[in-house]
Image (cartoon, rainbow, N blue to C red):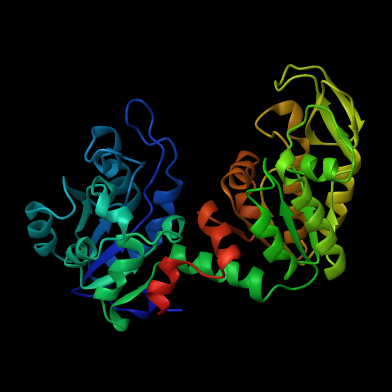
Length: 397
């Protein structure tokens, strides 16, 4: 895998696709700098070599061209502070000012281009747009794993305008690709995948792919109730995709034939309303009374899950075990997180991926106690489904 470590950037302009799609509040202040912080080691390596940097990113989903709400100018001070260097900004990405400023960069200088998605050509994967962007650098670096599953101009098309010696991965991309490869292709057994979240339909392809790799698949969150109903259980008014009952049943049968253990929750913390102050009680998962809904894993399920997790050597976690945003329904998710930490301490490799799993690990301040926390939920899932990504193939050829 070719990374920024394999190139000396002295006297070179590095054109870097970063993922600075960060949340802003109503005052246009950055509320979470995680994605910017992730890119800093790549940027510092290039500056230390004596290179200059042109940064390009998207922010949000602008529909009608340039809008103040989605301008990357709002993040300049954050990037400057975290990098410890002044970051210049240009109010376009392919305008005359952008090209004159990128051409004039001296070693150690950094320029941030305006939001790529102000041009529809970015998301359309337009080749002419990609070629214009390519003129900003001597070397192309992709460090935006969160968008590597999109065949956009700046992530997949642009690489063709750089020769093999002048394109590489940044440290974020390299870390992501290496971690996923370790889980999917070099997993030490037993390998346990923990798949949670609301909908079975979102995770069908993931579960099918993981059946070829994992020994155990733990099902949690709202999607579990579709499986329970498919097996003839009563789930009250719990979340359920009735049009996926046959799919759930087929997945269970397929797993049985393949010798993969699928663990469905056996009990649930139930409530009479979707609210933290709702009436709460405990129920077997297939005997939930009418008018009640399951919102978290019950104690039996937590015990079962913990045992499987702690005996695993490789762990992939995608999706919470319950409505962890509410304190009365967070126990299943919190316990799973703690079990993963314990397994990691005992030598397991643990990869946390998917927005809600990452949010949970961060909520419980456990991110530094697992092996790897993925920055790109959608990209991670697509990597598992497809075996690669457009942004990865663009560099690797």
